[in-house]
Length: 184
Image (cartoon, rainbow, N blue to C red; front, side, top):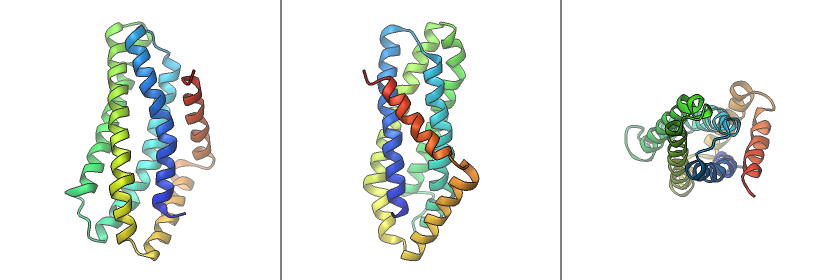
């Protein structure tokens, strides 16, 4: 499997959670009632799987390699992806910041959680479409076979050293748990 195919597979797992996030954001808006444990699981997934694992692979390895192959970091697709990663982190931080008040029943905080969840889901859905449809095909065109091998090894190292053994699988299971909890 090429490194970009691995990232696409991770996008599929992330999308499972984003679909649940969209449902939960709508539920929050309609009912004003929050399940703080569920939202905390979503935040855990986004902080640790989406950011520490998936985005780390892109930011620490794919994007610098693309830059070495002539794709500028300060403009074009890489710049857009980095800006969207930062925006996603801001939204996750916003949710985490108001979650305690929302858990206490503060209606304004519940609406803030809802709004930030919905915005995060929209951001990441569009982000994933751009990466899958534009950036990754470009990467596969400009990366050499040696680059692909090196990138695959770097991705494995992220999972082993930064994410931790078994953590990737745990977050796949959490994604399914979150998805199943909101799918009727």
